[in-house]
Length: 145
DNA sequence: GCCAACGTTGGC
DNA sequence: GCCAACGTTGGC
Image (tube, rainbow, N blue to C red; front, side, top):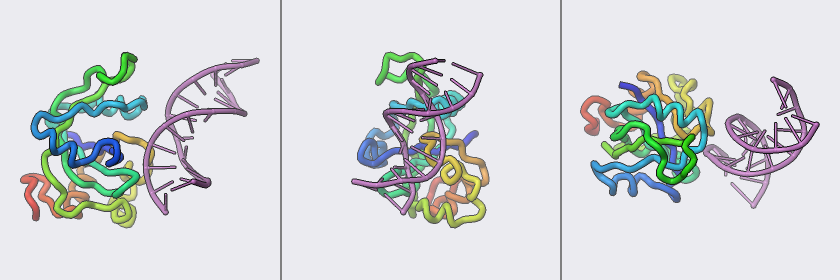
């Protein structure tokens, strides 16, 4: 299983809206960046990702799961762009602030820090564990610690 | 709201 | 195929 991170401005698409979609999930549409698209094409159903609020909040607020592999983006006719579907799995009991991520030496190579403009990013297994630990969630059971 | 970082576009 | 101009993202 691979791990990812999805950024969204809460004014455009918030964690609350994502959760409201339930198990059905929602298309992660609107990505117009080749790097981000290529990462989405790499994703498999069942992979997990962090849901990060950019612009406002600046924190990892929850965990999502890829519910459908990459397919044409319904918001454009341009066939260059496709995207996955994601569904909400769990809240971060304690949202992890960007500031905390930056302050943690274990996470200094995390894409969130090094490629902060990228809206869909890969997350390494040890980074996944560390951010889960900081957020007070067990990465296996998805239960609060 | 500003501005730095950086991806994309388009003229040559 | 280079690179300047431009547009967008996102932290501050």
